[in-house]
Each structure stands twice: as structure tokens, then as C-alpha cells.
Amino acid sequence: MVLAACGGAPAAEEGGGAATDDTPAAEEGNGAATAVAATAEATPAGPLSLEGVYAELEGLTGEERRSALIELATGECDVPIDLFTSINVETTEPLIEGFVEDTGVPAQLHRAAELHLQIMEQERANTSDVADVIAINDYDLETITREGILAPLETPLTEGIAVVNDTWAAVETYTYLAAWQHDLDAAPTTWEEVFSADGLAYQLDDVNWFATLVNDWYVAEQGMTEREAVDMIVAAVTDGTQIVDGHTLGAQLLLSGEYRVASSLYHNTVSSMMAEGAPIEWEPAVEPLISRVTGVAIHHRTPCPASALLLTEYMLSDFQPMLPEFERGPALAGVPGGLPESYDTMPINIDIVLDDYDKWQSYHDEVTRAAGGEVRAE
Image 1 (spheres, rainbow, N blue to C red):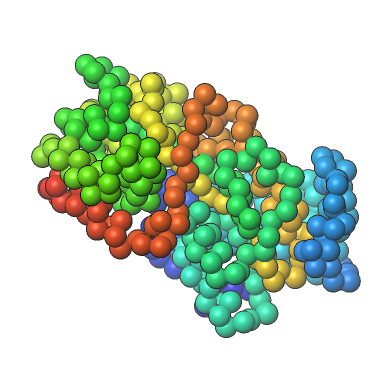
Image 2: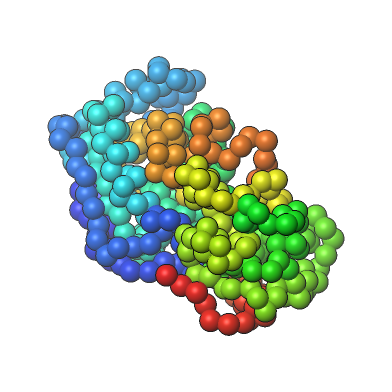
């Protein structure tokens, strides 16, 4: 499938990648691509590479940088630039509308599932049409990074962003945490206590989280072997554990009182429920807290590099305070609505999962089999 750059929308596909989480209304395809096009006019201009844009902006910050970038982007392309994303429409439509209003640069939104596979297919076909800006989950971004599809990202606006790589930076964060009923006699203080808790709702598909907990915590920090860590978790999971397919469902089961403890729920979901009076708790947090992100990147062959960089920087700045309104976690430190700054998080170790996904899936299957019973799904 070919993605049409600067205007054409692809057909959406159902489903998600093997290591994709069920981010609330964010990482699931709905079979439709949505376009929100700007009405601003654009006129052709001489070509300028992304490296040339970076050179023009060198040393500029703040409003001076924004103004210079808008000047470079104005009239750069004769059709709107595209943001290809799996983030839900309710969140990204206001983003695009705000971007166009604030900058006058035309842009449009296309949302579909399995974007990373479509983008890789497009690159292998060496088509002239490309997605300008790409905002998808961290695992899929790293997948296309390995294919050489993303341009280097050079911007001072990554300062304070939770996760920054050479080619992409986080725009949303999803912190996994354990939560429990507020009247629980003894709240868990370690992940071992979470796994052995009576009435535990355990997530089916959080392989990335599980791999990071085992490799980066139990092996790297606690001195265990992979086998020892997996065996410990398998032994801790009791017959009373319910395997749940879906973070929102897990939170709802906890809220209803059907289960007493839940593993790896999203902070933004739990916090939103608590703000509405839900009788659940997550603090003092069971640590380490592990986070995954949605990131933003620029295609290395975008024909509209200044416009693409402008939208990318807008997502790293102006977009951040908008996210809590949609129950999503900002990636920029200090923005209200995110994880309290007193907590440090451990990022998902994407490389170990990309390098050996089958092994980590197999380990995780051991845990879910030990719990037994049917999977509870929405």
C-alpha cells in the first residue's frame, strides 16, 4: 500500500503489531482514515533540504525560532503536509486545527492502523509519495528507524521530553502502574506482592512491559537470571488471577470491585477515575514504574521539511498542555496532568523485544498459562 504524501489518504487496516498495546482509543485501527485539511493557501518555493532548514535555524530558540520556521514553511508546498498517526481522532483533530490556526501552514490528518508496515512497504517500493510527519508508538518507530526511514531530529524543543532518540521524540507517555482497591488490608509494595495478590487482574498483552521488568529490573538491578525471574513470577501468580485483555477493562474490573489488584494499568486512566471519585489507589507506587510512549518523527524524504519540522516542534510544545484534556499523559516535564515529578520511570526496552520478540512472548505465555482460566476481554 502506498501512502500519499501531502494530500492522499491511505485505506486503514484493522489490527495492530505484535507488540502493540491497547492504548485507550489510540493504537487501534478503525478502518477509516480521517483528513482534516487546512484552508490556508500555499505557493511553490525553491526546495530546501531538512539539513538546510536546520542550518537556517541554528542558534535560534523560542519565538524567534518559531517565526523563522513559519517563514520557511509558508509556501513551501502547494498542498497540505500530512500527519500520519495512530493517535485517536478526538485528540489529533484539535492538534491539527490549532497548528493551522497558530502557524497558517496547511496540514491534514490521516489515521490508520499498521502504519509502520505501510510506510516500510512504501519505502521498499521507492515511491515518490511519503508521509511527512509520523506519530506512532515507540516500538513501531524503532522498527522503521532500523529501516533507515526517519530523518535525524535536531531541535532544542526536545529539552524536558521524557524520551528522545536520534530520529524521534516522545509526545505522549503511558506509565504502567499497579493499582488496588482503596480498602485493601495491605497494599502491595513490590511487584512480587502484586503478582501474588489474591484477586489479581493481569494483562494479557503487555509483553514489552514484562520484558523490561525482567531484563532491566530483576536481571540488571536485582542480580537474577532471566530464568529465575520468570520462574518467580510464574510461581507467584495464583489460581485466583484473572487474565485480562485490555487496560481499560482491567481498570473497570478493579473499579467494580470484581478484582482487588490490577497490574500494569495506565497512570492516566487510573488518575482520571480517581479524580471522579473511584475508590482505587496506586500510591505509594510499586516501583519501578515503566513507561511506553507515542513518538513523533520526520520522514527522511519529506518534500516539505520546514513544514514537517514546524509540526513536529508544535507537537513537542503547544500540543503538550492539550493532552490531559483527553486523558493522555504529556511527555514534557512540568506539564500539569502527567506523572508526579517525584517519580522516576524506566522506559520500555524496545531493543531487547525487537531483537528477540519470540523469546519474551514465550516467557510471558508461561505466566499467563500459570494463571489459567479463560481470558476476560471486552
